[in-house]
Image (cartoon, rainbow, N blue to C red; front, side, top):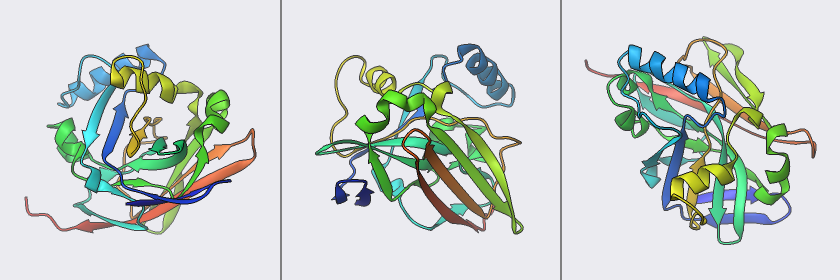
Length: 224
């Protein structure tokens, strides 16, 4: 069950049945090929076609202020997130938190290792669809008490959610109510890094508004 504060439409509570995480959703296909080769070079088995999609266990979705992960090999990444409810689509933001150590031997398993965090506020998707390329996402990490900008960039470099939906469904159609679509992320400003806190934001400069969310990360001890 999630609870969304929908701008202009009040609060909605909804059961989520499906989480879909898009991968390699950037528009620059040359950059994607380069990144795929980089990942393969360090042993990560990647699909040969893109964008690709992972279905994640619905129970992994959370709006919590604190999450628990195994060890210190995971990291967050900010994404635009489309939530389909009975009254249509809503846009919020989220973090596809991923275990990078596990990712090195199985990207599929890594996606099922960590919670998927989304915000508590949302905008009607139709209000932003026409200026999708103007939206900006950014994130910050806090490590040893030092907060630093981790990601920042416009969604102009990413595929539109309508394009992702059509590719995921294999043609025309709509995602069913109770579906959450993570639309992919932008590159980090430095190396991927675990942090004790992850904060994220999506900005709509056209309509002058922002949605933000943050969560603390508790690293559970692991036995290797």
